[in-house]
Image (cartoon, rainbow, N blue to C red; front, top):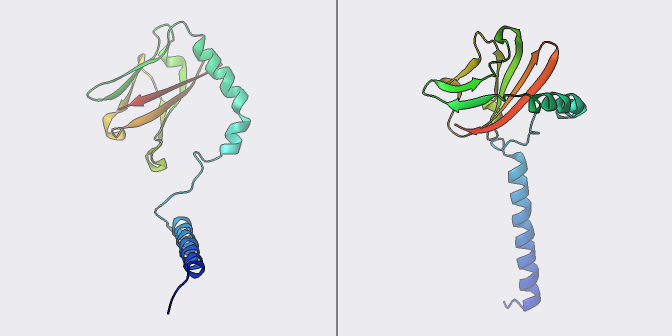
Length: 148
């Protein structure tokens, strides 16, 4: 039985389309691959954008900025000395871009101007730190990308 070029072309196209369909099926039904949005409540966070802009502007307008450095005990955040640590309230959110399961949030409780994120919470790699804090009724937001 001979196969002419037209039949070979049709067979090749059918095999290629079948391969693509199997690939799409495997990719959409595999539970090991996550198809999540970047964050939960994405649309709600989008509505709060103006508050975020004001808080970031307040942070930029500060005379001294929050600094951070890696230490042997973890990641140390240093708040400006001009702010009374007892009046600072807020949260520290650490976002891991590679896995939603590694994200965590810590309450911001200061006794001095330093805040330590313990080493056991941080894996090596890239983290996004977001500090939402309030001082004397004024809201601030500090964002930084670090490699731990």
